[in-house]
Image (cartoon, rainbow, N blue to C red; front, side, top):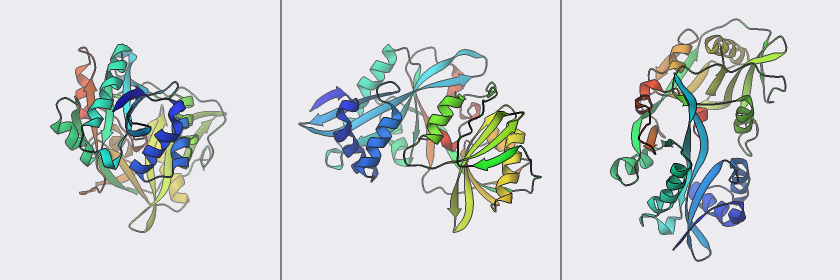
Length: 311
């Protein structure tokens, strides 16, 4: 078995492995790898059995905003861990993850961050050598949207707004740092996922964006709320709720930590009902890569996570 860094020079075997692991078409995975920008923003290592890539581990280079802490913390967001079905159970994940995190530590990246599903979080809990700690679960919520007045300056659209953006505002919780450019890349440039946007404009400037997508809940048309970005998030979400109601939706779905800021922001806009069971639960996990990681990041109540943060 040979272990090497992965780049776009390995595009075909890399995409083939991801297609097998995630039941996708290789063409989609080739598009996804270009989108993730492995030459600049994605750090990945793979395990090879001859010419076949049989396992890979990768992290996106991201920034975390912490209240009262400057500058932002550099972190590696774990994405798309994959092992070929014929090679599972051999400890390959740990072997390909190790050089990824060693490289991140050399680059003074503070931590690894992940969103693990139920199976992945069992690996995190059992494997002390893997080094991830489970910070806590993200919960699914059903939102019954209350009636809201419309706003002429707020519009729903499938197109990313071209107008200049006002400053998004300083975070009041531990959260991923976003800019208009990174939001546009994440949601408007994805190769095969289509997102909708609620855009709030004032005097020709975009002052807030809500990201969502149409879904169905038990056969009923609904929307999945994936994120809200702007200084006045309470009014941003209120205007969005009024707009999607006018478009025919009364139900929304949200994934976030319990008692987090998004729920408080929605308290006057929607009835928020926690779903008792999730078929695909997610857990926020953390792997410290330095000894000076602020204590606040280890406590879920300090975080703001949206469904759109999960890649």
